[in-house]
Image (cartoon, rainbow, N blue to C red):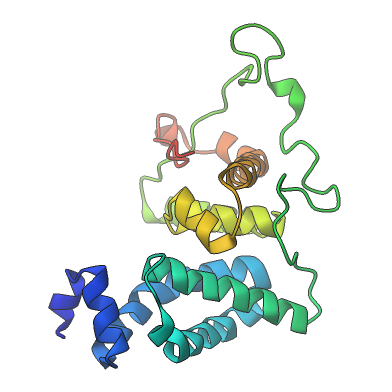
Length: 230
């Protein structure tokens, strides 16, 4: 199957060619998904182990693709293998990574505390629970230097998130997966996914506020990087 055909191939056709041992079809998904898989692996096991886990995942895909039944998309199935591989590797390294995602998104009380000062929200009236003073919009960088600086700030802030918040934010906001895909990959409820995503985004904003407040005047009316997704 040619690379041009692969770019427009249906899910069923792609799976069929991979099961048949088509090397170009397998190379296509490796090239298109490995970057996203690496970012997810880093959010769970860290940079040092991430590449190895991604390689282990692809080996698992090769060995088990014949048993793929299409109950989820091939990408969702592959990412679920990746997340399981991350947890197995973390346990083997005796890393402190949660084995399961709690229904309320809390772990040892660390994620149960407010991500943002409650005093910043209205407590009564029609808009109770909304921002008292709405935060400044996220910048829309106007040149490469600003884009690099913002990425560095975001990467540093992501590394401070609790692991479950981090992996949900990475899956949703970095890799663009839907809430349904994230729930399927992580085996969590829609409510839990929303809680983790909200807390992760809120924590990122809090930790990036100093940078956002210092942004140049030309970014004063920049667009939002939060995308409004829920």
